[in-house]
Amino acid sequence: MREIVSDEDVLGGDPRLSGTRIGVLHVYRQYQDGVSPEGIASNYDGVSVADVHNALAFVFDNPDRLRSLERADREAVERIREERPVDPEEFTNRV
Image (cartoon, rainbow, N blue to C red; front, side, top):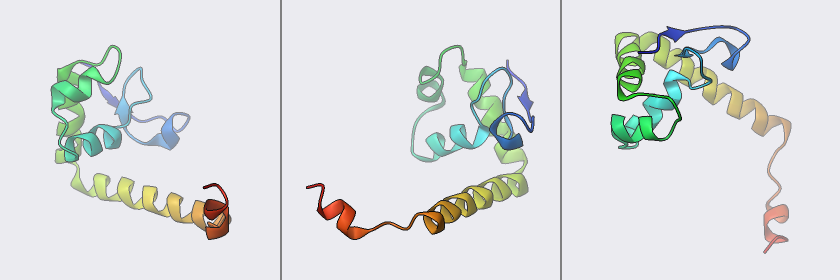
């Protein structure tokens, strides 16, 4: 079973499955969307159901960290939106 690791050089230090770029938040979001642990594991080469359960256990054991990751994710999306506001004309002209 893969460990949960954090490294500033990968995913900005977000916790992830060792040897991968699969963040525990990615796993958790799929689980929230109703994907079974078996289904999540099948989405990735070399990831076992035990790896998925380990990622979910990390999330459930660290709710404060989860909230912090989700907050950072929302803030990153907002920064991107502020840097490049969506022009409604841009979408209208594509159709």
